[in-house]
Image 1: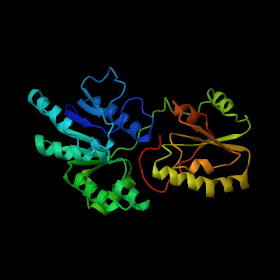
Image 2: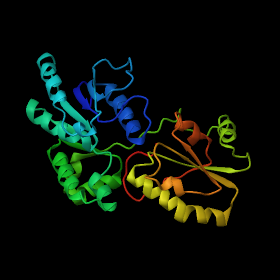
Image 3: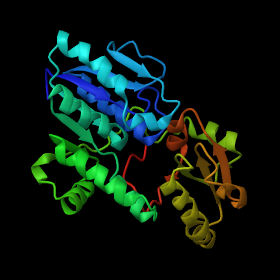
Image 4: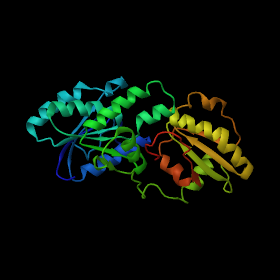
Length: 289
């Protein structure tokens, strides 16, 4: 895709990402802005000089992300001055806005489905999963192209939504090897700050800890992974980083080899310092870094 004028709608922060979904959106903006002209709608955040056409929106009420008339109102003057080629909506939150805006300005939209959301809700036994299924189905059905993170997600879309394979584009989450790499220089500093001895292995789990799939992962760590590790080798420390308290789970999560660091500004330093990074997730696809 080159030389297109694109309206890019993101319900998440784009710059200075602190979560997996934000990292993916940040990379998508970098990819599509190389050869295209982007007009970006996103929540308020620190502005990056590189991108000129940005509209920051106040989402103190998060449910406004589902349908935001401000995006439509700000787009109408744009289409008078430039030829908009398509709309790009990221995650289910932006899907409705993309669909409605597409109908109003009569331009196609691409939909980036970060997770198969209905499947995540169903696996966690949420009572609203049928509603999520209908919503996701309609957004995918009327999109010109749907983007997912893996071939596995593509196969699920074909199976559950009866989508034609040629309509689905797989864009795997890119990894910036200049940021993520085994760093022997930073490792001693990080380990020392955590109280980990040089001869101890550092195992890392990180994420938004109040996110349901990550709460499930914490339970798996506590009930399955830690007992097995203790039988194999007790000379390790498991470091847990991220916002939230696991829906109260962390209060009763006591183990001598577990360190709760909370939110860290530069998670890449902890990844690069670790001997092993784990992601024991049973639902959701999304972004692991």
